[in-house]
Length: 138
Image 1 (tube, rainbow, N blue to C red):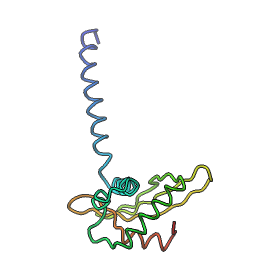
Image 2 (image 1 turned 90 degrees about the horizontal axis):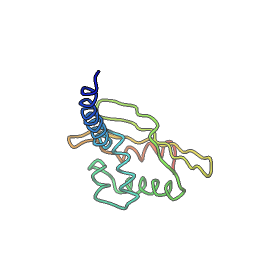
Image 3 (image 1 turned 90 degrees about the vertical axis):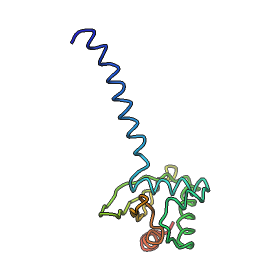
Image 4 (image 1 turned 60 degrees about the horizontal axis):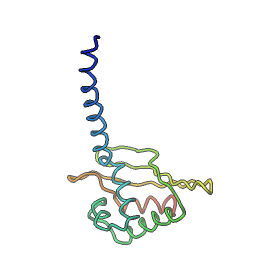
């Protein structure tokens, strides 16, 4: 490759790199993982409109309060959450979420049920509360 071809391919490579990074940036908030992340962010920022956007419409208020309190308790104890695994079905995903507490060398794991509807992926709060109560209560 001569100098002219090399110089001409540099802008093309830069555009391709920028395009690839843009696609990954835009797609980070799609998919079942994003519903869990959005719920956490909305609860912690007390953005109740965003909480409603991240959950199924038929949510029971007591179940929502239970999960929000759990997320708050983990955050208040300096817990960091990370999605560890996903079990996928067609329009339903069970996400295993791990909360780690670095200063205590403690890890807590919860399950979240996320479902896809016509508007995207949403946390099924009622089912998630049942999973938490059956497995682990924060």
